[in-house]
Length: 278
Image (cartoon, rainbow, N blue to C red; front, side, top):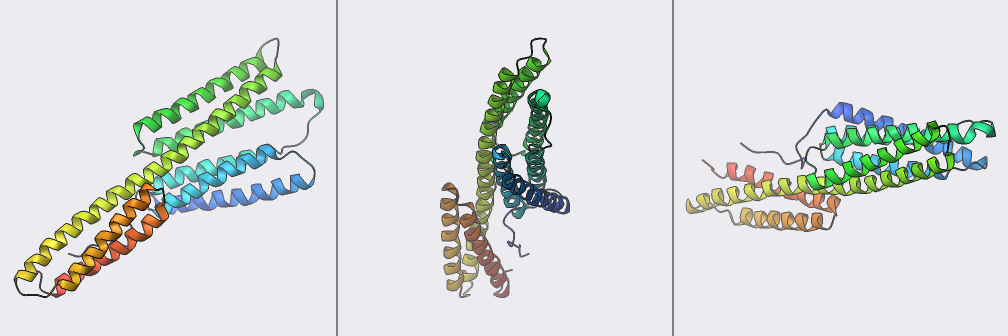
């Protein structure tokens, strides 16, 4: 039986659902950019909204990458996370309020949005079943720390001697900690993709070894297989190149090499059948 190697990672999850969430997140991104640009022309402060869009862009791009690799559950979770971040960016451009209540109301709203971001991070993390335990613990630690700072900020706003300025400082520290969690998530995403790539490449190496054994059997029967041996050598070099590129975080380059290697392996299997494999 001839295997197919057109897609370099086995599908995991619901592709239709993942694609839908990606489309929704993309639309949310377009709307967020449109409203931020409008607010900018009106002279509003859009620094926070712009920062959130940048975070959302990264997460959405990573979602598209894992989707292309067939990891649909992770892609869906990341797309939902990106969508929420784009929505948060819009909420930072909310309507003006009287100056007497503006600061406290805005702080409460930002605290609530930040809590939602934490929930979405945890949801995304729960879908990353293959993530290394060390990175998972680091991300969870950052998220817990950010949540603790939010709790402190909220208590300051609820206390009798309200201290909005100190609450704002706690909120800023929480946002910084979440940004650090995002940085770790970026690293986790790379490590996860490298992990899947390594598993895939090891599978190719096993197939190449099996093919060599089969070709040796044919050769002993007098069947000419030199050309197929040369192709296997080329596939082996491509697998090595893919592994080297993955180690340098060039996953797109690694994927390209892996796909060509897969096509060669599939071709050799077919030729082996034609030439008399028992």
